[in-house]
Image 1: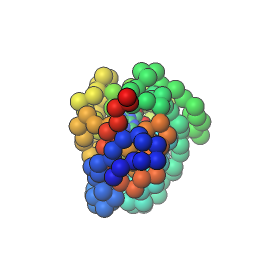
Image 2 (image 1 turned 90 degrees about the horizontal axis):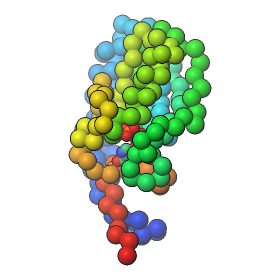
Image 3 (image 1 turned 180 degrees about the vertical axis):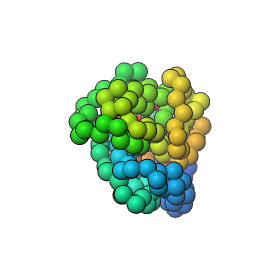
Image 4 (image 1 turned 30 degrees about the vertical axis):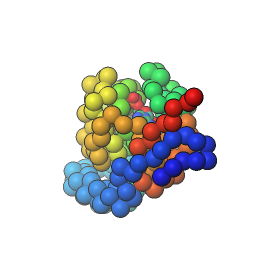
Length: 187
Ligand code: IMP
Ligand code: MG
């Protein structure tokens, strides 16, 4: 597909909406199995990127106690394709979730800085009964900080991807599929 509107670049589909749905069905089953005997899971979606993944994965998780949904907003990318290196916390309000089972829902683990920061923060603030992270995407080849997500939708190469929540300069989050964005050379 050619992005003509802003002449940004070219988008190649990596995972279709259908492929994403199929993968999330089995991931949801896996999470349901792992938490079925645990009390009151709280999932925390990291905005903005995780909004599609969170909405879809919680509807694939079936637990006797149901689950609680919270949101924070963190960012480490400016509006470029490279991480800024420091994690910003535009919205970090959470109720008291001390000693609960916590599952963080992320769009993608890239350098690992955002996830590491947030897991350390939650550990220190709430001393959770358990603390895990589910990432829609994992780019292990880009890791700067050692961290391994507990649940991964798809592991991808070092590509810049957009859609299904992920953006390039706040564009493309609404696309129902995951695409690789190749930027046009300026010139
Ligand atoms: P990390 O702290 O380097 O792991 O960065 C994680 C954040 O960078 C993600 O939550 C995304 O918002 C953003 N990010 C990393 N890779 C991509 C990508 O390929 N496309 C869009 N956003 C990305
Ligand atoms: Mg993000």
